[in-house]
Length: 133
Image (cartoon, rainbow, N blue to C red; front, top):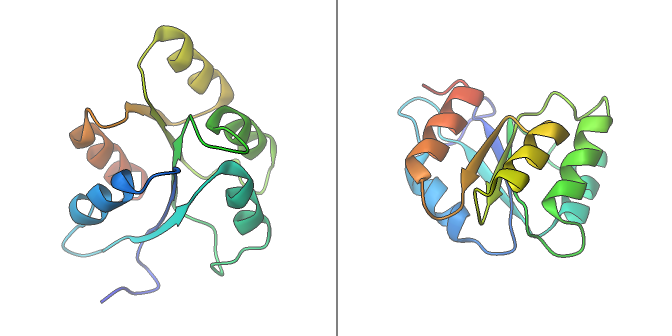
């Protein structure tokens, strides 16, 4: 059963493989996260601005390559807006090239995980940022 105290995690990615994995692996014995899949950065900003879930998320998993508004553009908007700046963001990148990593951290991400390669690190970072250890 999911309670109001359950961490709310937004997964912004055009595919849902990350979401499916995380629903099975980010679960803690005491707090089962609620996941919300969002296709792109523009839809994320609409959801946040209108507070469609009645509260802000505890964590955003944001893919760098999303349609309409990519992860870099979205992260830049999030970190410039005082209402959203404090929400932890873990970037999901297709690569760990130094230029991509540098750009993500310069824009203010809290962590970066290479997509589909190191889910154990993603699980650990998500648990730490949502206090579900």
